[in-house]
Image (cartoon, rainbow, N blue to C red; front, side):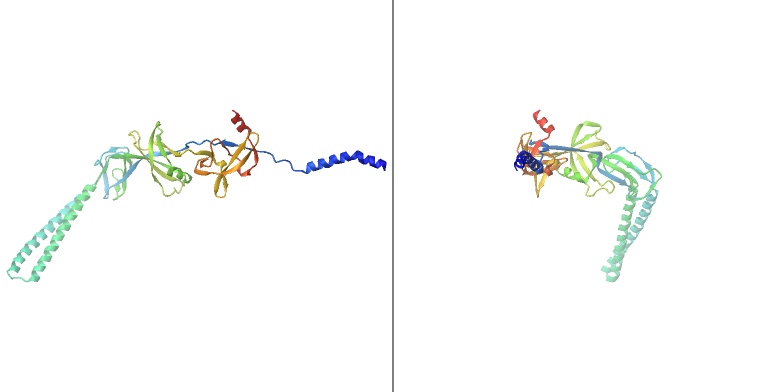
Length: 369
């Protein structure tokens, strides 16, 4: 018995140590401190720019056409010709319209003769009626004959005016000052009435046309400024105003055509030049620009994680914020943050309130420098 007691006393400390070691092995290891990347809150007036490439065009471009059909006998302009209002551009063969005028004049002469005869007879029958030689019915018939002859004369005169207009329509004149941008005819070609033969651009108002994807249309609608520069003159900028956004997307490119009017366009800005349109978005008041990765959604309320502590270890808390706008790769915070606070910008969906975190090494180094 004495030997057994001595043996138990000898091994008891070892057994206790083994049991304590087993308890320590079963206990869960402490949760590692998660590294985070942060950005310091610095309110400022935010400005975002995006650029598009477009083409300079005239705001008003007219399709020119003859109002009558016929064979073209002459063309007096070329593509790029600068013309004044009233300039003769092209002419049709006038022979058929000349014959139509002769026929209309003959019709007028015949109608004039009938009118004169009917008027003479009407005057004679009125005198006979006053002398009670003819009846009222006979006088009414002569009156109707006169009215018919008068209407036929007016119709013949109208036909003559139409024929004379047709003669004028054989010549195509510029209806405004401008530049010929397209020609689709040559001498000897037969054209129909209303067929487009030329295009006339009026360069007094210029605009830039470019295409925008559907997810960038809000930038145009909320733009605070638009700057236009030419590739030929990159050092100069001109103000622009959005005049039109196409209501439907192009069926091939699925983009929307946008037209921006150029304010005070110089004479050196020629049609067809390549231009760069810069859309400027500027916040009216100071905001905080953060990466989109910093935003956390708590129900319907946007929020961010605020870091507090030192570089080695700190904690995070969730704070609701007010979003001013979303721009490319950034979110603008209008309220909810104080200058100098640190906002977590990466891994926000893996954090919980009060969680222990530490700054990344590069962030800490940047802070020390």
